[in-house]
Image (cartoon, rainbow, N blue to C red):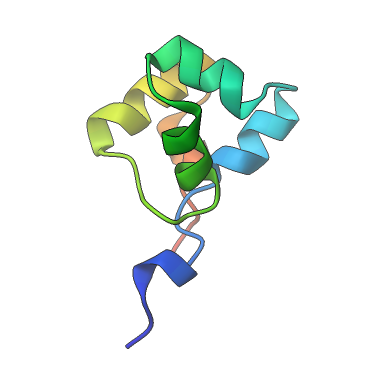
Length: 71
């Protein structure tokens, strides 16, 4: 079975680039460490659903825009 960390489950990095925002900026907005945001962007770890909702709000996108489709 393939490890979840190898799969690109979220699109946080892509959306940040589309919004011309950095990992450091997002970390500051969410009161998280830049290291944590970097791990999310690299799909090494996944944010909780609550955190994903906060990210969507801060970036002014639908939460679905932050997740890769399974279809």
